[in-house]
Length: 110
Image (cartoon, rainbow, N blue to C red):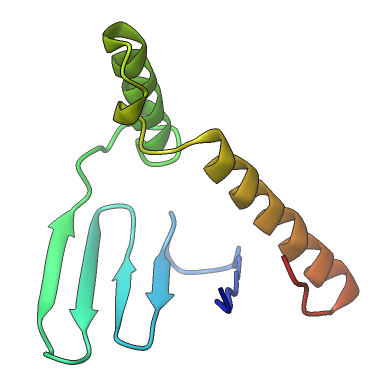
């Protein structure tokens, strides 16, 4: 769909944990393992939310995925999953292309 993505991993910083910045033409989302803030460029409105899980394992993400999986299994309702196998394949393909880009010093197309 014409979307461009860039990934940077920095290991030598004064802080620990993950920081995320998603920049779009009408707004951005900036956050860390505790708080995320969405800014709408059109209105200037900021929406802030706290990440709900502080458990270990990818900042609680592993717990969340397992929780959803168990809930979907116990209810027999696959719609309770927030991530699909197709999502996992796409994210892994992006990671592979990012590594190829790093190794070759090139822009890769997915």
